[in-house]
Image 1: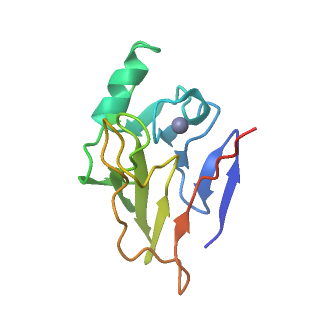
Image 2 (image 1 turned 90 degrees about the vertical axis):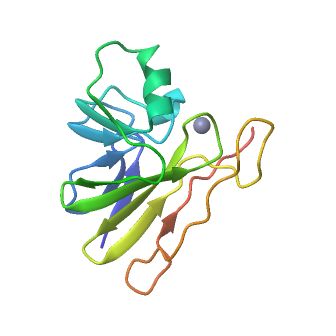
Length: 142
Ligand SMILES: [Zn+2]
């Protein structure tokens, strides 16, 4: 299973036509949270209801399927679940179960609780073959 990441196309799993946090418009994209470096105005968007609300203030008439935390949806042959990331209101990690693998894209995340949000949820049993299947965002301070 090949996974790649570019700013414009986001995270991609080979053979699966869904982009996560792509920087440019895609036919179908999952947006982990409403910060501008993670969101683009895709034709169809999957995100949490909170992220949909925040994006609606920026863009009108979005094609959004809002998926609450912990609820799984079937998407292009995969089972997708959004998990709390603890970063900002509505921020989600994306758990993708596809072809016997379980991959988790964290997006921006925070493990410790803040004044307003619980920390990120624990993720159970992610795997790509025999390897832990967690793809974590890395932030740097300048
Ligand atoms: Zn962010």
